Length: 192
Image (cartoon, rainbow, N blue to C red; front, top):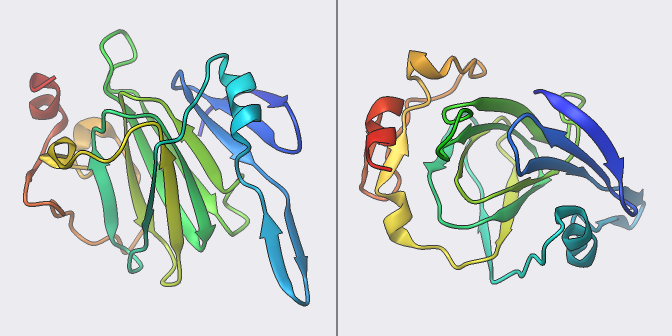
């Protein structure tokens, strides 16, 4: 992962990545005998950091078996993605027009020494795919628009050598979760 700078706005730390509009959010986790509590995102604070008002419209929850790839679709929305339990390998690909189109950022998110934090903010136009690295994982996202099933007609093939992604060992072959098709980067970009 490439980190350009570290900013602290409130009780969370923010780190920008090398893809514009994508940054990590590290929140404190308060643990005790009775369990734990965390506030991964404060939307007023997020609005201050972004410089524009982020208005949450939908919440999406998911889990996956270890080694399974989820996502890989280009969604027409911005969102925060939080790994509430487990460890997930995240792949982000900038699909927006411009010099950085096709730029890839990879990172670990969730619980574990590999992970910097548990939440990431992803601007519209950036594709995200996740690989579950633990069997017991739980993730959720909060987006500024509801999910649109037509956004999932194409899935980016993370095994495409052109992307140069170094997936962790044990990752299972990718499938299109929603009946669409898995395509290489060049074919995906031709549809934009």
